[in-house]
Image (cartoon, rainbow, N blue to C red; front, side):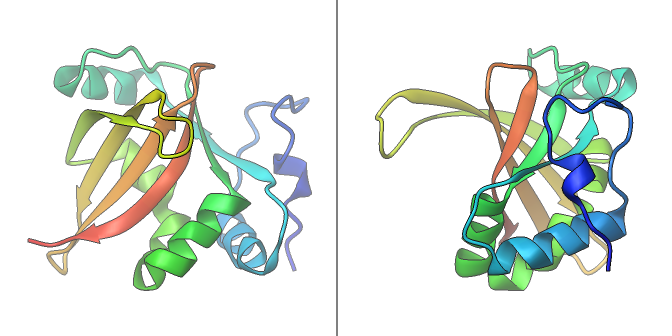
Length: 151
């Protein structure tokens, strides 16, 4: 069994050490059974990806870390169970998206306005998966939800 605790700390000693796809899948499996809200840093948005994002939306995303938390893994499990396997592909979806957009929505609990970055990727089976990431204003994007888009 792969233990993923080395990837939890947001202030890791070696920030370039990101989990493999298999380690992300283990995190997802364990998060589904957990009652805590540990984070996992998936990757960092590189210059090339940031330049592609900027072609779609006027945000500078270079160096942003992409994070998932156990809480939002459970959200996907409870609300979009068929799409749970795509959580293991978040790095691929962010790095190789087909389109990206910005969405501004009120937080349901606090009513404060939040900025979301929505990555879309089309797969061979014709489905489009959305990864909706929340800009946490600290050079980090955190998973909010992931689901299959009709059409």
